[in-house]
Length: 439
Ligand code: 5AD
Ligand code: SF4
Image (cartoon, rainbow, N blue to C red; front, side):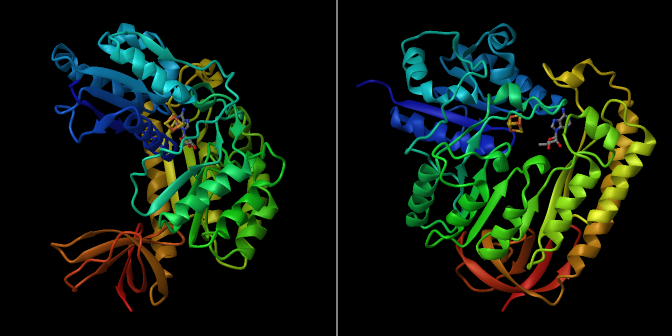
């Protein structure tokens, strides 16, 4: 009998990566592999990597160094994802005990690459040169999240923001047909999932290859699949954010009242240097559409501080924009120069301490904004989807349709299952979460 094939997979980075891993796990299982919980038990160790900022990338190389020893014990290593695509064959030089390197645009070829690996080959690569037209679809997706089903609708990115590695790591933009997206949504509903998150680096530049549905129409159609109660989508680019998306949210109650719309900066000059292709006024017009929706839509964003050339005046404009929009959640990052990107050639002019200082000022201000936003929910009754529980402490954690974490006490012996819905009366609020009691 041939020895059992086992694998351990660890994921870094964004939700796209998390979902890619679900597809990779499904593919490995299909190839006869069994997933194990630790590196020690595994014959094949895979890292699905992220290179969005330097820190994320360093983490991976650090980790690879730790496992030199395991190679001698006969274990094999594969590096997948964004660092794999970005570094390509250079990974074999930096980490000679790696046998397989593949970017996400080559996962279709994983079965063949695995066969070569099993035959003892090394230096196996699946690298894309922004040529791939195909998306990676598999019926074997091994969904790891018990309450939220991810569905990719568009892969890659053609935006080329000057700071961003994604167009180089995930290949060119390619959409799935609306029929295959809807078929997957129906299959997911049949499995018992009630929440779907549509994924893409830029979901609203979705173009149906069949020419049937626009992004807003697809969103509405997914929201109308019987059994689906919540639909989310990330990420949106302001440039492609159209009014019909707000109309769809107004018309279809299952579309969540939350939109993540990354702004990156409040300064027109910096936005131009970032090649974002919009001005603060353009962005704020979209925010005004969202604020005019029938339901109150929760807003969140991404911001980069310390982009090359960002002056204290530019930074103040970002702070002014925060004050104006009143986001419920902000992901803020210090600028980090990335390989291959146009901004790599700009002078990284803001010193590290100044970046850290701006980040801190921004996060403190945002905390106050959220303190006030979240406290407005006190007294409301909110529908919460359960995500997890801590039976020892009698506590349950869930999320509102607006994506806000809601925690509540639970006295009964059996904890509510992840994915179940409860109505919770909000009794207290913090800057990042709400507390309540089941009604
Ligand atoms: N440096 C810092 N932050 C970055 N992001 C993307 N590229 C960089 C970079 N080079 C941030 C952006 C993006 C989020 C996912 O990560 O804010 O929206
Ligand atoms: Fe990281 Fe971006 Fe790749 Fe996601 S797409 S894993 S955030 S580099």
